[in-house]
Length: 247
Image (cartoon, rainbow, N blue to C red; front, side, top):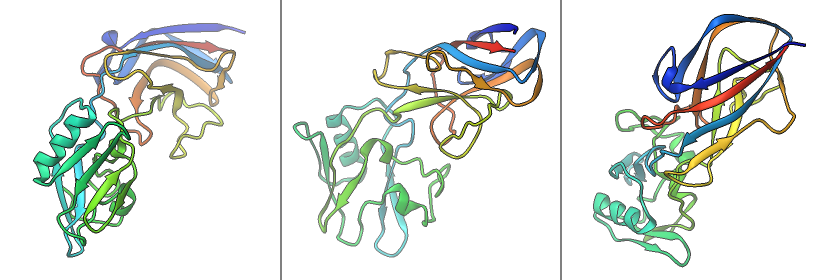
């Protein structure tokens, strides 16, 4: 058995647009046959704003179409988010700290708030958004209950992500099945500390993942994404990790 270890720091990436989407280059080719790998010492700073998964809020327009507003980019508290929604819509919006809920006054009974599920069959999205990716605030607001006069989001959270995925299209592992059936996930990373905290993660102790077939690797890609595969924004903060290949 031969072991090869690659230490990665996104600041030394061979190419790529950002610290969460880049190529790693090696000085020597690693040849592997039926090898396996594990990921250790994944570290980066939680740099995610409340609006990173989306800033749009959608309502029915009462005629079968959509109306929408957007809140400014930012890291919000419950009180500040309610105030931003009120400013964007011009309708009373209140945050209740005791229940961690937001109550918003609807324009009319036939103009309810729309969940992401409801948006899947809609059209007329703003630029950059779609039915598959509406870039909504709903990841933060959570489930809402419409009545004839208001919508209540019963438990809001200020972080847009519960976890992140480290992915690679080059280092595809066998028997991996991501949320959308993909085989490119190397590590699942819980996000529990909030903005500004240091995130650390590894593969489960003692666990290696089998790679697919014969491989000769001189470079490989890494991406830090949400569950939909969207690249996360680290805002210039580096991503570092260790990959161990066992051949």
